[in-house]
Length: 325
Ligand SMILES: C[C@H]1CC[C@H](NC(=O)Cn2ccnc2)CC1
Image (tube, rainbow, N blue to C red; front, side, top):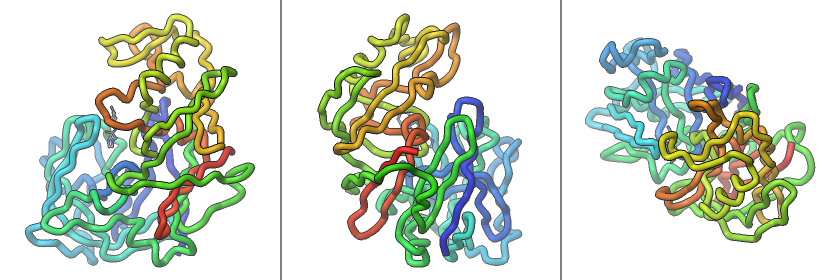
């Protein structure tokens, strides 16, 4: 049973996108994250101080809730935020797609970043189940459990700049993209939707062929790329500089930002320059393209993904598809 759900930007900067998810009739706005594989929610098991301002899942009010005795989970994200708790199963519905026996991870502790992000009531992981953190037995993602009931084993992301977009499960809606879809192979060994980009161009400059090991991550706001790409990009932005106090490249908010073209095979994905003016920070503006130093790979996050129509193909040979829109 295919489904479609609206993905709404949480703020004026598209720092994250939230989708309504029903857990046995209790509806929470969750962040869909193709960079992780746990479905966890704010719950009545949290200290009241951490629940404040959030929509809370109460398993005691769910008829279909089944606690998994002795099961726990504990996750830390790349930005050092995190959460942990206990586990049960329930019926989870996203758009028209319903799954029974879905592991729902109940938070008994969440980091301060999540407490203060009151629009966010948890995450729905869409990476590979191999990196689910539940112990003693890891659990399957919503997508993995839904796959057999979908017309085709895919989900698509049509995120938008400063506007609501959609995630579709089971279908590739040809009304949502233009031209051909370019597919590229995915390596699942780290549990991510990992692929190799073919290079880049800054503005109207010539394309530089280079292999860029990257993941498609809806749960990361910005684009994190090798230093060679990032310095080449900001050399074309007058007044740009690396500001260690802000933790990245900033520039005058009045700057005109060039487009960034990222190659995927022979396809040229164009990220409009205006998407790379991420947000005001201090007296300047913070860039939507930053260095991947210390991460170990590049991350094509929302600033990139919202410029494309993206197919996450979970067939027996997983692959990623990209198209313009
Ligand atoms: C330096 C980068 C900073 C941002 C990191 N992304 C995440 O932590 C993604 N995420 C998921 C849930 N909450 C956040 C990736 C590394």
